[in-house]
Picture 1 (tube, helix red, strand yellow):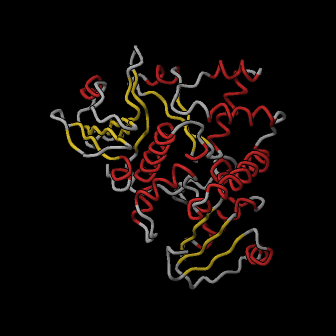
Picture 2: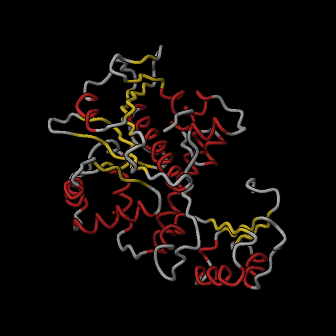
Picture 3: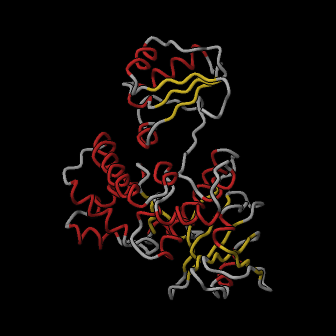
Length: 346
């Protein structure tokens, strides 16, 4: 509602608003019309397409909804060429710094680690509140949104899968190994992982390879949109937090500026790797190679293994506990994690 001073707002969860939507009654003198939770309306895309085709977009229309909106937009009647799609992420340090929230960088960093970036727990800032909220949040996703998309007969095993992923953040995931642990078929686990991605519980980061077919076969890593939900110490949660920030920036550049970016990690034989690669689609844009450390200020020797593969590159090592920032002779930036994440540009 802060996007415009002149708007009308209708929420499909409201009985009164639902009647207004059914009768196509809203204030067309406004600059912006907001339809919230519209995906709960039967045949909502056909309904919306009809409005667009008969009235155009004067006023402009903003449709918002839960993760189900993302999954449901891919099936049924096409709205191709009639809309722009924006992915809305939880708070990160960059968004907090750019907002009018009276929260310091360090306090925001601490909250993201302990209670995550979803608005309710982040703004509350209390661990006890977060734990109660998290249980409700997962219940809504797994028992309502998920079951509305696909019938999952063994919900308990899917919940175990979520717990397994929590403890393996930052590590390559073997689907075969997990399938054995869960006593499920390989394709079933693969489908469950895809559903968790569709519902914005986790996101996949694949190893980068110029050979796309080869990269698909390699094991990927999974991170949570809720960094506080990650099982592990501060360093693991920091890596997840950085992954979230980079993916959010990649989606922003793609959705808003039309500059497609993809998030990967870099790895060669012997276990030598760089945590993240933010790679642009356009050759003239700069690739970002980024390593995450809790306290290690010496630049990772692995940068030199990969830097020559990218014509334009920026190399950064983020350190949670760093006394002084500096740049090495080879151009690697050693930066304080919280400060860099609150103001980075690509």
